[in-house]
Image (cartoon, rainbow, N blue to C red):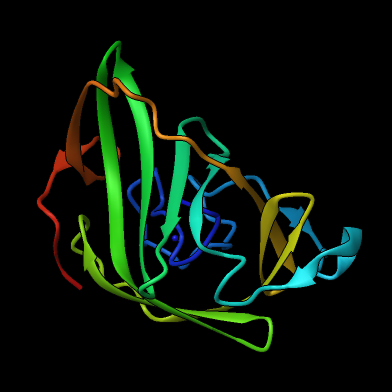
Length: 168
């Protein structure tokens, strides 16, 4: 889950993908030293994390995170180099929630760099999802998929190179 978030969206500079919540380039802006307990956040559970979430990338673009009730997730980092044309780095896999922690296991990626499993602290407050990795907290707002997204090319890196979704 760019994040950051889960298996956070991959790095828009073409570097290593990271589990959501990481503060790599391309990840969502992070608040240093935060915890999911701040601002009255309640611990995540299998019911309050399900949905679609988004965060802005630190160098542009948008990171989306979809957590389904069947325990699967997808995370994408989108940039729009030309009007109506998008480039996306994508991760898919499974997640588990237990005791305010989420474990993300990536099974498919669009970058040839392997993505290790990640465990992140999580909380929900004021309708937002908060994922915390090593003291860096990323806030994810609810996301509504636009009805007309245009052409999406899967791949990764800078410069961007097209890759299919492949086994991690």
